Amino acid sequence: MSGADLDALAEAAAGLVVEGRRAVLGIAGAPGAGKSTFTEVLLDRLRRGRPEGWVAHLPMDGFHLADVQLARLGALARKGAPDTFDGLGYARLLHRVRTELDAPVYAPGFERTLEQPLAGALVVPPSARLVVTEGNYLLLEEEPWPAARAELDEVWYVTSDQAVRLQRLVARHVRFGKSVEAAQAWVLGSDEANAELVARGTDRADRVVANTAAGWRLAPDRPAS
Image 1 (cartoon, rainbow, N blue to C red):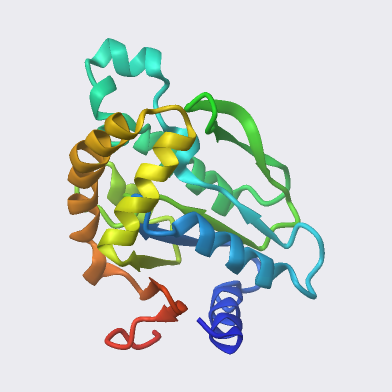
Image 2 (cartoon, helix red, strand yellow):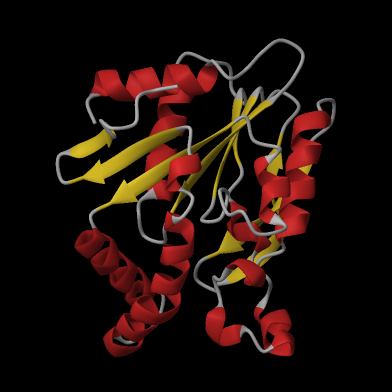
């Protein structure tokens, strides 16, 4: 994506903010599509020339259920599936983020090395006029995810070349401790099952951003809203 295109997307994100309320933008996409990378680039553009704390970042990853709960539920082998998140808790926190403007709103983060959520690791300060949140399931129609979608002004969907996405996922799992064989098995099993679910929401996105070898670009068949 050219600098001009990225500037236009940052301007569109900033344009969600109106006087007297805080806006929340969601970035969705399949595992490994590049949601976090795109969000980081977008946040960098949004911070330029604006006061410190004007935009805040709130990933959905902090709402992973801890392994102890997944083990209790018999869901440890499906970690990352929609029901292995506290989706309702995420939706309620988004509601707080939208409506509680006079005090800090603390949120859980996610420690990649431990692969576990970390309470109170993130904060949305009162100065934040825009919050950017990213997660796989922001466009999922099954409960409780529509409650989270209702708190978002827009959702942008990030896509990526399938082969590149799978390679990126395998490398990520290896980096955080899995063997190559275990990483490949996880990616082709659990991650791909989740990716198929996520892909069903593409048509409900407000914008589609493609992660290509040439850079980020707005999908040509999805005009900007």
